[in-house]
Length: 385
Image (cartoon, rainbow, N blue to C red; front, side, top):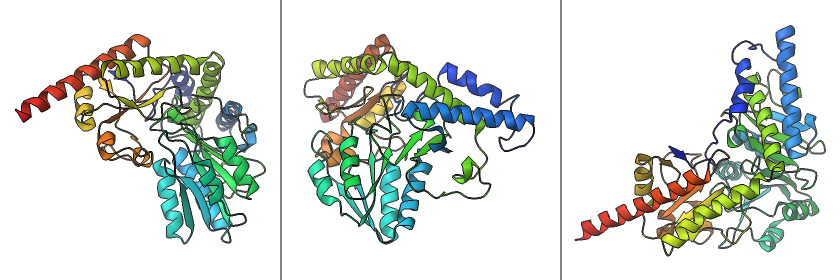
């Protein structure tokens, strides 16, 4: 199988697997235990905390390990609404991940207000509309996706933070797709909260991190055992945490080796195949700053649902959009917010590359996609005849 669905989940890197295996076998002690094995596990957790902090330019003590980004997002949204009842407004965008979309809906169900800022045809946030939406003294939180999981389009996070802080609002960044793909530094772009997910940065599923600035208030969603310095109770997933720490180390090395530019060139080569060999193809957000590994392509007249089945049979894994909430293919709210027609959305596939993909296999996958598109077109013509 040629795996081109890294935005759904990345493969686990060999070095990451090697780092975590001892903590699944010989070193299985609870990190809260007082004996030697527990102390060893605690040291491993704290080492990983420092590694994740270094990836995002943070202090080690600001990193809270979670079960994943969804937990981190829920923690921030629920805290902010409870903490500032006199600030009922949440500001977000029209192209958020389902975790924020559903969190915003719950915010409204609990009596708050939500403003969802539109994007343009390239998927870029309307900054003027965002600034106008902020209500100084009434906005509790701004929550924005940094790198879109469907199109790869980047949000202007530095501008978002500057405007939000000027209005007295705190900022949460969903950086799930950014980590390990592009540099992230919370000192240079001073958000207040930032969510990460291990399985989107070459670690296993089931571990994530929430970064909380030492200057930002926070109360935990999960209470009980007082783990994570009282900020997230529950026995730590030591193997997952160790893996996420090693994934952060691997990510920093890749970033320093010009990895993003090389991956962007590979993505561009894939897109060129579609644009050259299938006239009328559309790359969503192509004129906007994007993640280097992500392309959302509309293949004209090609039913995406049928293509996914055919490509799966032919050994190419991709998706029709986000794979985070269900295995079914649904119309994409992200593409709808960008002004795409229902027909264009129904012909759109997302290809997201990983560091393990080679140029040869990506170009071979492009051939497979184009052959499958021709096959579906021929079948459609036969059915008409």
